[in-house]
Picture 1: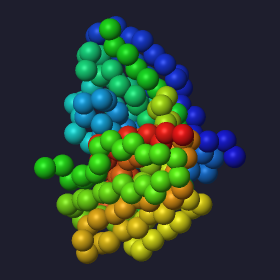
Picture 2 (picture 1 turned 180 degrees about the horizontal axis):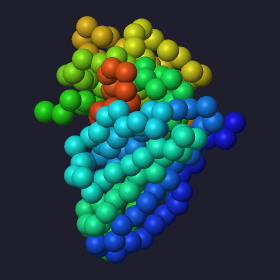
Picture 3 (picture 1 turned 120 degrees about the vertical axis):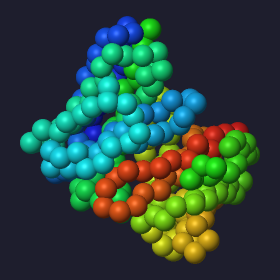
Picture 4 (picture 1 turned 30 degrees about the horizontal axis):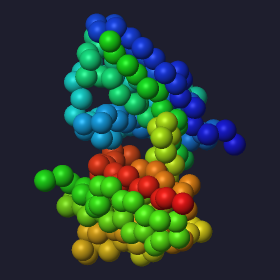
Length: 114
Length: 109
């Protein structure tokens, strides 16, 4: 069974640009959650999608958005990039959509904003 | 005060030693997760606990719900165990996890 796939693995963008990251969950998993990891703040929850609906959102500005498609693949978008958005972005999927189930993480997308 | 506190922040051990990493949390949770992150970024879920104790090979995780405390133990540590270990807690029916800052474990041969 293929794991969680995130693309691209590495990305360099310029301030002010926008970026779209993709996450393909394990087949059959309907929940996808996104996290940002920075050296200063550690891992922080961005948002979670289940069956194409955003169920919860972390404390991030509106520049961060996401969506989920009918095949459970998810994308997150960051508009008007700032230097502070440089981070490792991780997604995780699970098969029951609840916090009491094991999460399977992707390898992450490392975004550098210059 | 962070909602999830891990200790120690850094840990260096010799191969074969018994390792303990601690996690305390201040919020109500439905589950606690132990995660492992190697250089390069990928995260692996080691355990998901809501009570008691779980064991996978040389790894053991325990949780005390009343004391809001969990421990991750590694028996007979090996250099390949070197990684960052992260405690995360979640509540309710969604996957909004709150993370500790992580423990950097280095096991020397």
